Each structure stands twice: as structure tokens, then as C-alpha cells.
Length: 379
Image (tube, rainbow, N blue to C red):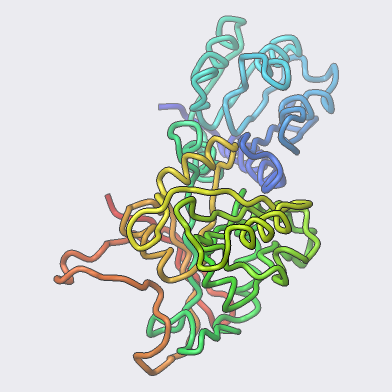
């Protein structure tokens, strides 16, 4: 067990804060921060700013310059040891004359996975591992799953009343939660690579599915609409509203519409323009897509995280197939007060309450008079 000082913790915390500045821009690479310290003073710092760009260590060491000789570096993830889109950072640390490297967590990428640390130690650099390890893993939870599996990390978001409703019987949901909660939801969109909804949500709400932040420009995720029968109107916001994001419409390859095949082809041609793509997938029972196959396809497109926002049937399928990694529940102090609204999940539940799904609350936030509960499934 390493014994880290209060100063060590302070500098690694700074590195983590720097890493967060890359949120929304680095995927499928991780968010990484680095701080170079000499004689108790920070002489260089940086973070991984965008996918394919220089890594955090490069910015920090360049800022430190020749003063890096004999200094310490604090990095939130193991320095890479291989040539990818950039040269190996472990070698840059060695060349700079760093004497000590404090690393939060080992890189799960098989191309690194300890080899960067080994390079440093073989060069005589003291490498210490594990400071703020869990914080670093949580920061890059989507990267860790993306690297170690064939599926993106899945967030499920709900905005609901105290009695569990996400819309009235007419489908109206504006607005259940307050403005603070909605801003937090936009931050979650900014973080995710893709946002997924069913066609029912689009028809009911006509959402733009963009990330709108107050203090900075949000990065819009890929917008995915599951639309088996290609019911999407050409007038919807996600087709016509300007966005930096692409839109992916998933339709059923088994769909045989009542209207002519020629009419469907014409609609596909109109949709497949600019930043919109229509793709066909096989569907099974009740015209539902195989979500595991779909997630695997998205993983192949370098999508490391997906935010599922709607609707009730889609959420039910993700829940029952155990595909959700983290739940975000935004709860407003409102009671719908009926049994005819749209509940959070639409589908069959268990016969016994003892068979319901247990969650572990890992964080809660007060957002004005709204409450955000962040949870994961108990294992």
C-alpha cells in the first residue's frame, strides 16, 4: 500500500479537475489530466483536449520545459507505451528527466496495461500507483467498459413525478422537472457519445436532442432514433434543426409497409442527406430490435457511451435485458395522481416484489426542489 502525502492528493485532485475539461471531446479515448511539480510548485499542467490530439502529459511537460528535469508528475491514467495517433507518453516522461511519476490507475487498454509503468521503472523513474484510483475510474467509466467489452457504457435517464410518471395520459411532459434539473440533463447529454430514443418520444415531444449548456457550448451527441416502420416525419427538429451531431435512424429490415416500397424508398432518400443516415436492422418479437446487437454495432463505430432518454417501452427493454450501467433519476415534487399516465417503464413486471431490481444509490444531488438520484444495479 502506497503512503501518499496531503500534497500528493492535492496535485492529483488538480489533475482530475483538469481531465474533466476534456469531457465530451476525447472519446473513445479517456479523459486524462497531468500536473508537473518541482520544489512544491506546479511548473506545468495539461489535459487531453480532443481525440487524436496530444495527450495530457505532452501539454504538461511542454509547459514545464527544461525545468521538468528532476520533477514529479501526477497523471490520472497510466502513460501510454505504444505508437498510436501520437508517440508514447512514457518515453516523453523518460526523455524529460522526470524522477517520480504518481499514477492514479493502470490503463485497461491491452496495448498499455502496465507496460507504460514498466518502461518508467526500467528507466529509473519511481512510479507509484493508486492515488485517487476510484475517482479516476469513475471519471472514465465509459472508457473502461468500452475497452473491456463489445458494448458502450449505457446511462438511463428518467425525469418523473413522485408517483413514477414521465408524462400525462396525453403524452405531455413539459415540464415535470425544474430548470436546474434540465440543465443537469444537458450536461449528461454533453458527456455521452450518443443519445437514444424511440420513435414514440419523437412523435410526442419533437425533441432536438442537443446539449444546451449555460456556461459553455455543449457538444451534441450522435442522435439515434429507433423507428422500425420509418414513421419519422420529415418536419421534425432532429432532421431540420442545425446541429454539430449526426442523426442515425434505425428502421426494421423486416418492415413491409402498407404504402408502396417506392414511397418508402423516396422517404429514405430524403432522409439520407446532410448529417442524417437511415440504417436497417432485424427486429424480433413485437417489432423490437436486438439491443445487444445494436450496442455492439455502436461500439464498432467507436461509440463509448449511450444515453437512453426514452421512452417507457425502450427503457423497459434495456432494464429487463440488464443493459443499463448507471441510472439517473430526476424526481420532481409533483404527483400526477392518476393511473392513466405514462409510467417510467411500460411492460410486465415481476409477480413478487422480492423479484424487483435492487439499485445502489451512489450519489444524490438537490437541484432546487428537485432531487437527482444516481444509482447502479446491485450485483
